[in-house]
Image (cartoon, rainbow, N blue to C red; front, top):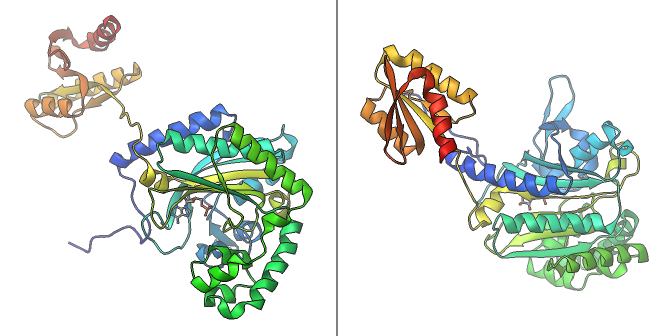
Length: 416
Ligand code: AMP
């Protein structure tokens, strides 16, 4: 035997026993998001690299070191999507969605790729549910999105959730603040970690995320963007918070909340679960009013979030899972009955029953045992002349003409 092959590091198989939970999760997400008017979108698994370089921002960890980028064979650089917002903004601009009634509300459930160091809750291919609303800067958009994610996490039984919110102001305010922060970091460079010091020019905001003691002390004295918002931004933030409070969504204001993507403006938020350890962020997002324009579209406000499916599953106290019921199991004695059995399973499926047929050549006794194991409601034992129909719930058996099996089940079901 040759060496057994395994999945690449940081990836995993979704096996059938795990798939049921994911289907339940997707159904819940669809119900909540489509109920609020969000419609599904799917963008390609890879995009031109520029979408992320321009959109996510050249200074971010994602673009600096986490992207799977390759040549498409024709000298063009493409990248496996590390996140969903920039591709959706690209699609909005490409398809002229600004001509539709605004805001355009979209949701997705897709896999994403980041070359990160794998650990529990952090993978190189991972799945996200996300929602985006493009074309309105109304604070109700931000609040609605946050409430929808809170509802989703609550229905998915994600335990011990904490919501932090902040505001980064407009891009101009952020740029001015960035310079002030850089000056503060430069003045205190000798107390900073090596890593933070080397990124003062590139990405000073990330210094708030550091757990290095010296850096934390410097950051405790750092100027805060939230204290310096202009009036319109401060009013926007206050309106979002007011709507959250009215909806009963508890949250904390965190002036140091920094997300790892450059495109955010105004509102940012993050949900964490106390049930997770190091990788405790289950979902987050914010407003990105300049992003569509950066990707070649008209000036368009936007807001959205993404939540990690693996993290939701790790933090969930239990999702409602109902595997598809088996209405009929078609059993048969020998190869000469296979054709009739196959036809019966086919007929049952056309009548919209969930039907399975024996595919492993088990003995009749083995077939009945298997039908019981998979929870089949009826078993049809196909023979040359007649078919025996067994009700697995009551144990009753009927002899039925081969042509009448499906009709008989439909009639029996109608009676109960
Ligand atoms: P981000 O766009 O980085 O804020 O990611 C949004 C959400 O996706 C996070 O809150 C996590 O739940 C999830 N996530 C991000 N990166 C990974 C990863 N490498 N593996 C698993 N989940 C991830």
